[in-house]
Picture 1: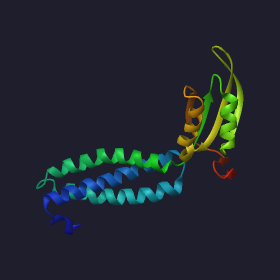
Picture 2: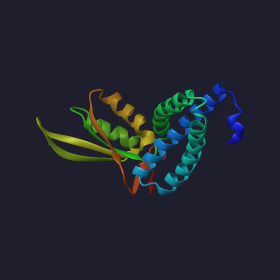
Picture 3: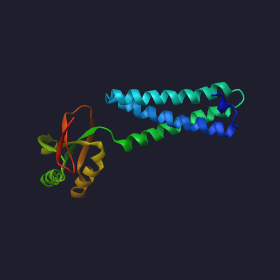
Picture 4: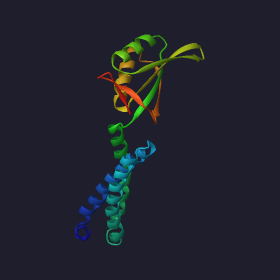
Length: 183
């Protein structure tokens, strides 16, 4: 990358900084894809991630004696890339979640509202500290989670809920079109 070596220090600083943001952001998303077992996505992202990283690290290593400020660009890009990667992954919202919900007074209304809105809902009988409870369980795409919680909280603002990542599933209903999606 000889063409980069002739650039002014400030230009190189920002190039290294932004390259690190991109490669670390990709690393965050790739790591989550690995955990979710998405092999193809992980391989493709990994290829670009390492290619970008090599360009950034080679500039720092070859010019560290003349431009030690590149260490700051490299480290700052790493730190910023983590935050950007987490936000990017949240925006992509890949995968599904399972939500357990318990309402003290509005269980049936919540179940009806969720089903009417296209969510697949299962109810279970449970036993709590204060006696019998109805547990509402819903598996939905992560992209619809906030909308689902808003529907529920509009009915019962004090509802108890717990969200868990679903690592494997074979189908769920997609809210809005009421069609079962088989994965």
